[in-house]
Amino acid sequence: MSDVRVQNFTISLDGFGTGAGQAADAPFGHAGERLHEWMFATRFWHEMGGARGGSLGADHAFAAMHGTGIGAEIMGAGKFGPPGWQDDLDYKGAWGPNPPFHTPVFVLTHRPRPSIEMEGGTTFHFLDASPAEALNAAREAAGGQDIRLGGGPSVVRDFLIEGLVDHMHVVQVPLLLGRGVRLWDGLESLEEAYDIEAVSTPSGVTHLTFTAKRR
Amino acid sequence: MSDVRVQNFTISLDGFGTGAGQAADAPFGHAGERLHEWMFATRFWHEMGGARGGSLGADHAFAAMHGTGIGAEIMGAGKFGPPGWQDDLDYKGAWGPNPPFHTPVFVLTHRPRPSIEMEGGTTFHFLDASPAEALNAAREAAGGQDIRLGGGPSVVRDFLIEGLVDHMHVVQVPLLLGRGVRLWDGLESLEEAYDIEAVSTPSGVTHLTFTAKRR
Image 1 (cartoon, each protein chain N blue to C red):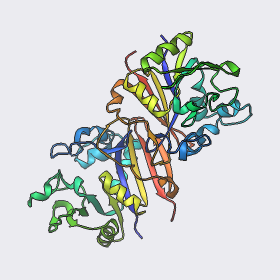
Image 2: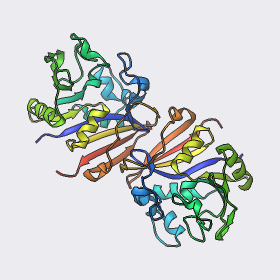
Image 3: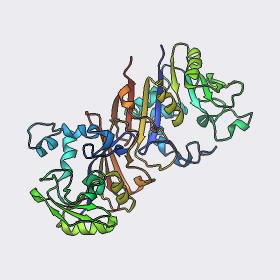
């Protein structure tokens, strides 16, 4: 059975996975790009943009797991586009013609629409479905590979509450956002279901990895 | 000028410095002793209880800074005793006849009472005062040494908001408490005032140290 994995999910010290005020030019709201600077410095990120360079240290090693062994992604409506994207029937996501997924991507929305095939192997499917139902669809499309749960925070939380996450990689950045959407709300005793490791790196971030105990 | 320092202040992954339901037999509420197990394993803790043994690793090195160079402590009413202690005029704090402070301790409460001299050098003073006023009193009593800000979470937050904290050592434990009192609420952009380091240790906790930039 394939695993459900969260990779490179970045939060502030106060636990926000996205800031307040999300918009087309501010997908993480008032957080701007500050949550992800640790990743921009890695070779993983440089290569994704077709550039050379970037660090090959621990931050890269974690970041590079993002695509390995992944056959499909599930994401929330808030990651696919800014508030109100459902009103634009031509909207094709926040990533341009060749999105960085290269697999089927299942977008959870209460207003589904026909699938969209993009360049580079990404196809967006739109589902009004529970976490378990979405996972069934993604699993069927993933050809035996793992499912990446792509966020945002409330979608990750929903899957955690249902016990559907096998691995989770959370990166904690020493910033205080003060407002936005929290990852950890309502997850009391989550640690009982996971083996948790913490590794801080010279960039100042801390990588937290969760591995489900029931395996 | 002496510094104001927070030492060994421990929070859950979701940012709670104390759990819900504080009581005489549960000073950290439903968190029990789980937040502080990292500290119980150190030589610092063993020695404080008059015992031998305990680790001498990074957790000890951080923990042992607790008393070094400290001339007074400031704490909130919720640390001094369980809810309602103000109604017991004979109440002398949660630590028995010889409390582990060995300095003047200023307890912030809206119902002050006469000072109490304990064994071992601890004297409890009770103040209905603002953070700055309490700090003035503690500084005068500290004889040029540093002031430890002892918690709980809302007192630390009040002093942070006023810009009165010079050093802060926060220990993040891989637990999710889900409820209680959060340290980080209302502290947006706190990182701008501090140099922050993160160090994870083999026990699974992450030590975060904040050093004020304006020095």
